[in-house]
Figure 1 (tube, each protein chain N blue to C red):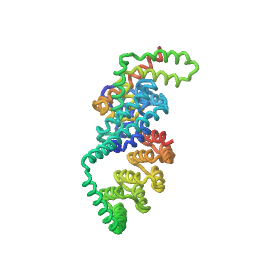
Figure 2 (tube, rainbow over the protein chains, first blue to last red):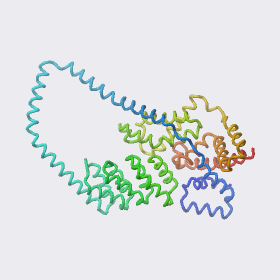
Figure 3 (tube, each protein chain N blue to C red):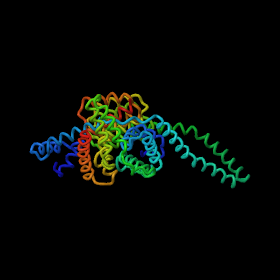
Figure 4 (tube, chains in turn red, green):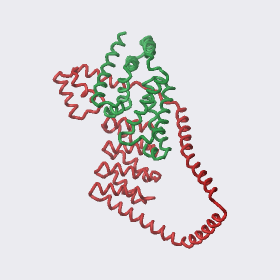
Length: 262
Length: 174
């Protein structure tokens, strides 16, 4: 086979070739520049390679990994604990009785002032609640805007909110299912993941799977399903695999996601 | 991985759940040994933790992960000095398959031959075939891992496939 077509055929085999490239290959086969028999043999061989199985890893690997992770987490905490102990030790060397008495007096005065300010705290809480409501309103309005940049900003606002109400969730899900911009839809998934404990969000994310056309959004949703452990997602991915002609990489991603979710 | 880098080590558990099987399959197809593959998967996640600061997020996560996996594989074989040992199970396996060939259906026999042929490919070509065919990496990603150009990877992949085809023909005639 002609060496100048090696790269083209490698792309064909892995499924990385676009429609134009595929028709070029067909053309080269038709003109005899690519030997059809050899091409077919390679194509079959590539398919057959997929049938060679690999065993599953043993469960002891899981135990080893989580033991290692736990050790790493403890090792990470250690310096923090050590630094506190060292700090206390260094304080002890500078704390004399007069200084200690002075600190106690300051604490008493602080406590008195603090008790006077408690009433103000409820006002502050009220104010921050109003601020949040305002932010939510602004977000919902901006999500309806015509500029993709504004809609992206709106989605980002939602990530700053400590909690979201039903309307905001509805707006984000609507964006995920209907926004023309892929970036906005991906960002909406990221934002919704933050509220992954909310049942409405979980249901909405699963339902959104079959409504998506963009491979990027589908892959992002696959990641979200795994992160939020949404096992229902596997059923929707199965349906997607059966009903649609998806890219090779998307199929692979969905198959591996299904394997994790099942 | 960015969250792991920022100190949320629990997120590594999520990455483990998602990638331990592809990594195991990669190592198993490279070395054909379950225990070694398990050790190497563990080694990859230890390295991810150790070198998490080096993750920039500029390329895909799988590219970074398989770069680590590849280094772990190379280091392992350097350490045990087994890289020079030729593949010795080929003939044995092939003979077994030939002895049983009357009872096994043609497809199974072809699969066995293909498996042996894959083992007979040189390591670099085998690695490219595994990363592309089994791990679903794009040629550009493989090129980044192997520190070469996308074109070179495509040519090597095509030649590996041709070599595989010839090997299968030779093996079936033996």
